[in-house]
Length: 185
Ligand SMILES: CC(C)(COP(=O)(O)OP(=O)(O)OC[C@H]1O[C@@H](n2cnc3c(N)ncnc32)[C@H](O)[C@@H]1OP(=O)(O)O)[C@@H](O)C(=O)NCCC(=O)NCCS
Image (cartoon, rainbow, N blue to C red):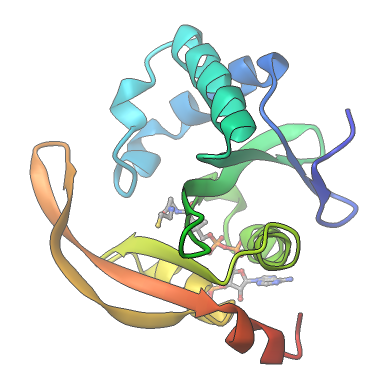
């Protein structure tokens, strides 16, 4: 299947499709305990039927432009996702969401995927600002944002209600004019 975006010889981003529902469920299920630390939706995925529903919803949201979900394939293996969880077209800005399997972290897979995805958002989707909300204490995600040129712009108190607790979050943002100045892109 042709990728939505090719990242490098090993890694590519794919749009939602029904064949990805089972690998997505298996990946989440095997990494449930880890992913649950940082992501609020994990307990809502209990069976392949849930990821099938998620695929259907993602396809509809990609079509109507409210979100943009993509799945990271490393070789043939589904290893994570990256997407826009909220487009604000009035202000030409959007919010990123992403996760990667724990055993494949530290290899630069997400750095490369996110850099390419952000480039797509600025160059092709006409965005002027990309932001991400990172739970306070999620150091890996914060490091990823900074390495991509995002700035930590502030903290939001009890911004996320997750598994019966409120969590503080940090806002990271990158605007197109700062992104354009970065030589590494
Ligand atoms: C956030 C998350 C995606 C970051 O994953 P990651 O593995 O750190 O990201 P990368 O794959 O880009 O790897 C970056 C690391 O690999 C290293 N690296 C190795 N080769 C590299 C390369 N060619 N290019 C870039 N980095 C490389 C980097 O130096 C960096 O190391 P560091 O963590 O010691 O700073 C991951 O921790 C995750 O999924 N967490 C759970 C879900 C989550 O928190 N999502 C975000 C919600 S806001």
